Length: 246
Image (tube, rainbow, N blue to C red; front, side, top):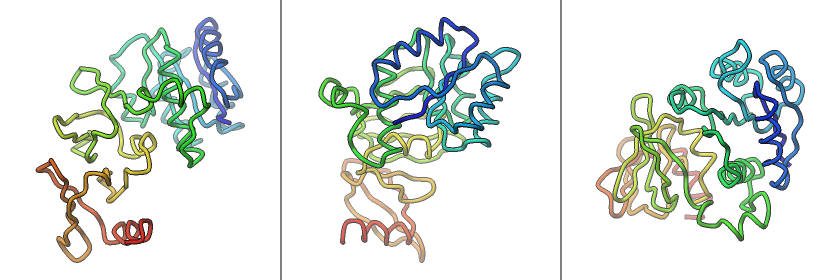
């Protein structure tokens, strides 16, 4: 059961979101507020799994509020909701899990909450059987914003993910995407065949071709159908061998 909190200046918007959430199984709304003070009390008291927050609150800026929430409850997944796209870059700089444009869409909410639920529960079952049977194609994709454009990327097509300056790069067979996010945030959204090989890399095990020792404590990972390589630490190499009995 995911504990959900809501913060929005508009009571109508809060009611609309609650109506959408009522159609999703295993969701418990533990509090709502239209201001920063009330929201921080909810966060401190209940430590919700998920927070839906409007960027523009009464006399507060949602991005700044999110920074405080990351300190109070670092495991809370923050989902911004707004009618504007201009805050996207700042949102992911504070490790937002998702960024939803109003009017909110039920299918997008289901997709996002399913991934959070999977990560929290450490199991493959989605929020409800209806989701897995009715929306397999949606749950096998990840929505990203890259260079001012929106994409639905097939998760199985991702070869690896790495940091680049203050951005994250998603490398696929045919294209690379530069996004404002964090590796930690993306790691939550990915299935078990994605492995955190290094603090700066997540690799898709299905694409590995070779793993060669590069230095005393580091391996270089080569992939099929890709000229780019990734890194793997010695400790992660041992973990990989233990996990798959290599």
